[in-house]
Length: 244
Image (cartoon, rainbow, N blue to C red; front, side, top):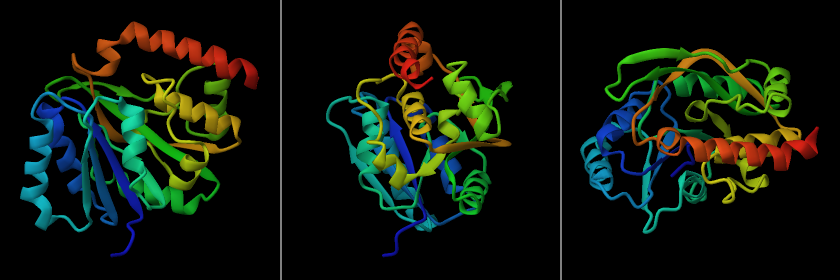
């Protein structure tokens, strides 16, 4: 079996309510040369059963392949992704959260950009913020487009310039960087971006809304808001102070 160009990584924890919509958004992509690697991070609801039923029902409609792997203990988003990505041999990794929705042309746009810009490690995009029911809240258009501005946003302003569930990056570079850090469980994405930028790797944001980013009571940002802020501050103090 040939290796797909993209591995779509989806880790999930207690997302049964949104999971089928998230998976459907991947199955509906205009670009088809991909696999889904699904990792259930020891959910206590019906997330795992929902995933199994979805893959069983939709397998004949899917052109790629999928791998499912269930965690026995909750390890967090970053480590869950590390375990899922360890199963991949694809050139690119695309992150898809289990409670978000990818626009139909997302994969096609990101692959087209990455194939045309070999100097870029990671590409992201804009997002539309939706509420728990999926209703429009507001556009998320803050991420800068060009690498220089993205770098400045990280290193000087100490802000995260990549909307995590919109990103695609090179798997080999991810492995060279050591994957997601276990130390920063609540902000594994921002820590990865900073380490990549310090190592000289480049970023870009596509100026199009590639995902619908869902806000709901059980999201990490809402449930652990102050802890996320503290971890963000501590990580910046530890890494960014040495980089500038």
